[in-house]
Image 1 (tube, rainbow, N blue to C red):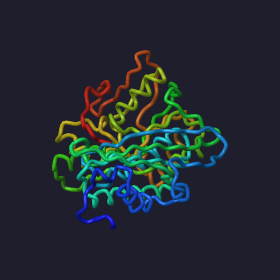
Image 2 (cartoon, rainbow, N blue to C red):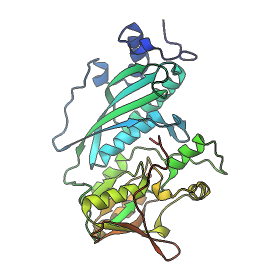
Image 3 (cartoon, rainbow, N blue to C red):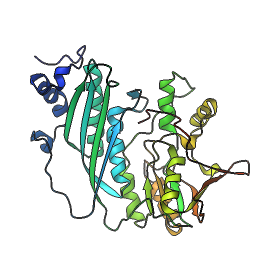
Image 4 (tube, helix red, strand yellow):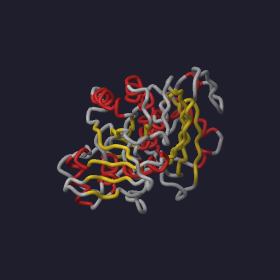
Length: 340
């Protein structure tokens, strides 16, 4: 008997290792993610990789709500993991995916999530080659959680790391900030704005490939997800033992995102992003790199937002639009939980 994708729900037997589980895996996951390595049916994937340094990352996705303007937990899991590999200056090769499903979760929603995940994987050109499925009792999860891992190979001559920022270096963001977090909040709280705010969730590895081709001396690459630009720059300042100075007027922020943040009392610098990156490069590379980023579809709104400075205190500060200066400190608590 085939699964009921219209009104069926996840049952404990779908994680029990028997016929029901095999049917779920075959009809959904194998069908959606089909590729030679996955289709071999092993508990692992065996593959050859190009010579060079490897990057490996792992992540978990517990976002609420599961569906939001611009994406869902499935596409987000692919984009986030691909981006974590790319931020190591690497070309992503393969992904794994593990699903923790709650008893009673609608099969129609699960199918929608898996289809979105498969589409994101195909668009990125990074296949899901192995995975796992578990089912927990009703009330023990929130519908579905996804864990992922990704591997990739570092581009020749590229050396990026959180501790490589140097005084005089330039800080560049690839586009508008705060889109993802505000999109999630608008759905979560039932807020309506004049125009829809959509998540920026996307895979950035092709943008990174362009960047390292024109500026292989890049020092740092990071995607400012939880905690936003502010948390990421504070982490980098600590790791590199430097200070950071930002220019508020240079920050690219969509008017509707800025307005929503003002309405809700949020600072866009602390709001999560899922399709933007921060890079730090030597000053002699900045103009060339910025031009290349703006010529790429994923970097059209790229902007220089600040510089790295000498500072024994490792502070991140910002010149405000009113002519003052303020410290952009670590986030106290969490503005928006369950954001990725």
